[in-house]
Image (cartoon, rainbow, N blue to C red; front, side, top):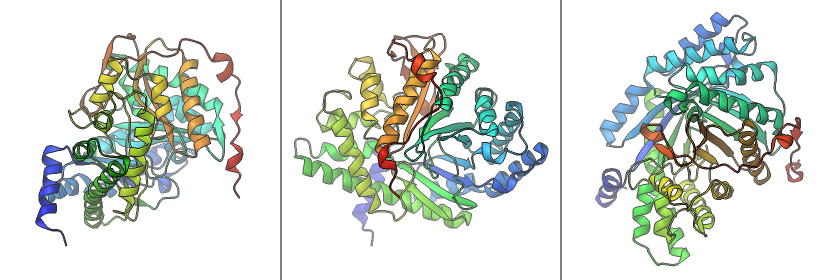
Length: 454
């Protein structure tokens, strides 16, 4: 039984500590939209999305009003489009028509992003996969709501270095085509290793082929709540610190569980998972970096930061899994630079570097996320950054990702402005030494020996 004290506590978390449900993401299978006729594929895709998701926005708003819980985003993820369009799309231009159909459908149902303009290529690329990847820069430049992802590695398959090298060029092309908006197109493209099928967070969300026809996934967030809770145990030992994070994560996740169950019931669509990830925003007090400071670090990036992040990530998972039977997605702590004011400040002050961020990704939920780099960075260097991050995910049997933004016309010392939840970011330096001869070798980096478990 919920008592009045718990009600007041939840209200305080929402009103004063930035607690929200970051997203209700409706996953929709488009496998039954495949056809040899491109016009029919586009028609089927539009009809299915606008039918299945027609009440998503309304239901989200109803739950917000009735329970007083902010639901920041209502979104859609779909089956990787390289699979759906394989029979009908024979060129990158064909795939761009599907991107525009997705954008039109997303606008029709009122969601801010639709994810799944994706390809899964950890072991090799089909012609369809390559055509979709080649279409990504134009697809992102010519649409407003479409998000793209490419999974280039896994613990079982290794790393597809042909795809990694190609994506170095693709990211630069996407940056060039959206240079009038500080290369914003790159903010809608994620490169993955071990991508989960049920991630509700953009830009990397897609609806996995093993998922049911439609499913409701919810992402919760509450860095501000965790920070406030830790203020009460300043100077306490690690046992008290861990208990506080764990109990707070439990409370946050219960809010997400309530929203997920209500959305599932009202939409008459099965509940999938809760993603426990602590996702920061540019709002003051809603920062992972500020949690580190309350833990006792002078700035994010100081010695001890990786240990603090490992502790935070683990305790969030331990608390969250007690609050929901269905935990999935990424579930942990995100460290996007542009979306976290504390991270931005740490970069500006020289406390946080690209190399330190890479080390931190060994123990957190995602990877190098929303990082602005000089617009003249070589494609081979971007590919090298991707390869490094994919290797961390592959060897450690975890999801890692890269979302870097080479901002055309800007360099170290400048700032890129993305707006909204995407925030702004100082341009970070990239190691100037080349890796072209390495990434241009082609082929595949083999899976690690510990992948052979069967």
